[in-house]
Image (cartoon, rainbow, N blue to C red; front, side, top):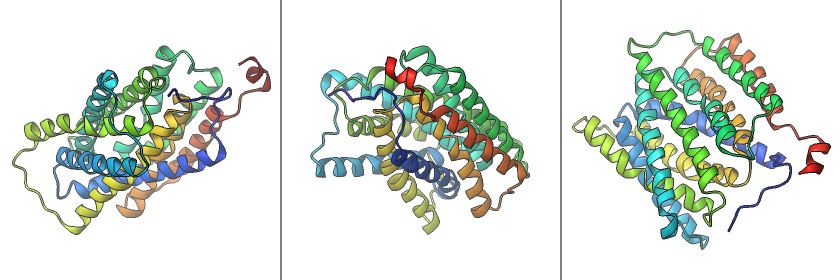
Length: 308
């Protein structure tokens, strides 16, 4: 059944509240990966996360009478989504192991810029307007300000992690735009979309582990297990399910603007939990990001709605 969209496509207040909470959860995810990397090789952790989240999603969907497997004629879309997701999270987890959490979260969440650019050229109903463009640029300026707030200098191979996170951001954007272009008007639910992303990512993640990390020691301490549980249950299961429901119902650019909050939460949480510096540029960035989100998500004028 085709997902419905409204004339204005404006995210309601309740949706905004949950999007902000989701961004807080995702910001905490970056910190949790630093803990899980202490005992589990990064790509192996990403593989285990997808396995656990797939099982939990299957159980939850079945309890609600929902199908998780896509129909045979939609299988190619599910596989494509899973491959993109698997590639994204392979380099995402590796990137966190090579650079500081503050840097990683900022580079990863350049994703809205790549999403907006891809949506503008590939999605006919998700064009960039001057106001949206200004909002995205303003929010990106906020990220730059947060980036400048970092006081400690990472190791000599930090640029490897930086590039990996930029690559993960581009792959994340590609996944979002691909879903919106090829899947949203197909008889595919958000349960099926998320399950395809998780389940079909497992082979590529497993291959990455075998080629890059096979033989590395594993130490399952309590903090490591708690971090992996957070990533698998809270992030990959519940928050992703909500995210995929949202992208089935609202414009990609509008939703992606909210993810600019995640690096702010990530930097703040890394300051509280990991002891990283919190400086004035961080708060300047917060103001810029909030202003950018308002510009991107503000209601359209009555004139535009009446013509829709």
